[in-house]
Amino acid sequence: MRRLLLLCLPLLLLAAPKSSAQAILPASVAGWNSTPLAATASAPLETLVLQEDGLKATERRAYTLGADSFDGTVYSFGDTEGAYAAYSFLRTPDMAQANLTQHSSISLSRALALTGNLLLDFSNLRNREKDSDAIELIVAQAGGHAHWGAYPPLVQRLPVKDFVPRSDRFILGPVALAQFLPLAGGDWIGFSKGAEAELAHYRLAGHDSTMLIVDYPTPQIAADQLRQLKAQLGVIATDNLSTSANTATSGPGGSRLYAHRDSTMVALVANAPSEKAANSLLDQFNSGLVLTWNTPVLITNQPPMVTVVIGTFIGAGEICAFALLGGLFFAGFRLLIKRVLPGRVFDRAMQLEIIELGLSSRPVKGSDLY
Image (tube, rainbow, N blue to C red; front, side, top):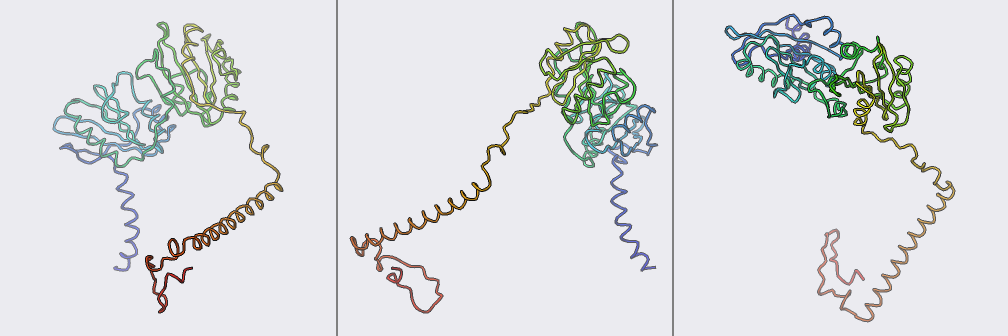
């Protein structure tokens, strides 16, 4: 029996950290007690979008304190990018900015908080003033389990003028994109090629217009995808990055589509009231990237290998000659000083103190150094 316990002990030690790491939501906090709930999404569409964003695990608990209660859910994603995309999808226009984390929102009955690769969703809130302390503690404790990284910077490329607050969405897949900009079916943007998208709404001359910025891994992929959009949606594109490259065509349903490419990014404006209004929005778009294609190649300016080898030997010889001449100059200068000023500069055995290492029994004299 003892031998069996010794054999099972390493397995128990390995399994203990794994089980404890799965519990992100605390069982009790600030007097609130909780019970586990089934880890399921509230709707099939929500489940598909979260899986599209890289959902790894879900944990849910129901917290109660007397007659008050609320539900807490934590979604674990593979990286901060997927967590940010899920946060922008679940956030509704009625949710105002909260101070739980850098990216957090709250309404009368729901709160969202993004911390690292974890997204916390608090629903069925009844008393925000009473629930806020418990929610802040839960978010703070969950941050200790999160994996941290940079959030997507694509939102910084959105124009600020005429922007509709809290309308920005970071999108990583076609399922989420179809909910906000259903221009075509399937993966018409090219998420399978490594694309990432940022969507936002703008008020252009009293009209609700949508701007979609798509970032591709390379400029070549962006140009190729824009050519496909030309054939599929009627968008006309050009490689010219000036404002004159902005073009407009009729898309599905007769809507006007305006496209512009800048380096690895493609900007698309839908439902604009006019070409002038769309171009004024596209003119504010800037990828922030500068690609240089005419950098001179260093290889064409390099001398032949024979010249490099010969120059190396000549340079080494010059260094040796300089060292030899410097040694002869110092020796001649010392002999000259000894002859002109004997015993005043170098031969001062009674005035110089020599530090001896004591390696031999014979004492070192100053005259031995000359």
